[in-house]
Length: 143
Image (cartoon, rainbow, N blue to C red; front, side, top):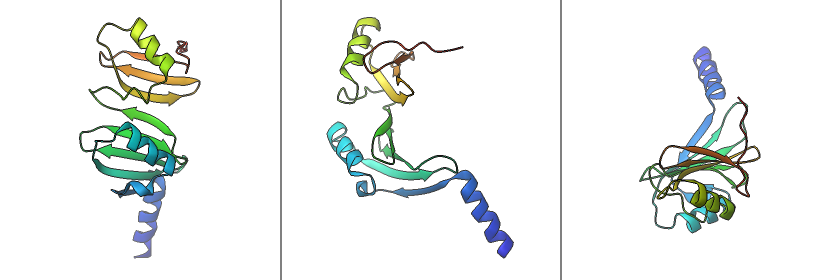
């Protein structure tokens, strides 16, 4: 019996601790405000608090339509994935919006945006990825 408990505890530590909830109040206030402002009409399927063995606490919010938003422990969004629909413009820095409007094919829109070191990774509905600073300058990616 003790061996089984030890194995289960070890697996939880290795795979990470996760807790699912539906209550927006488990999120930091900053994340709550972001969701109310950016996704006012969406219904939450579940919120998952996750702490991996070597990573800090993060929150993933999954909406009933498949949209996902990830936050850090302080409530700052890390990633917004709207699948095939546009990411709300209120999420995308203005200079990145300008870059996309000027450089992407007509009718393109952002379906996913993620914070990365030095800026953002932006995916468009045509499948193209763009790596940009907050002011819309392309980031050169190493090989």
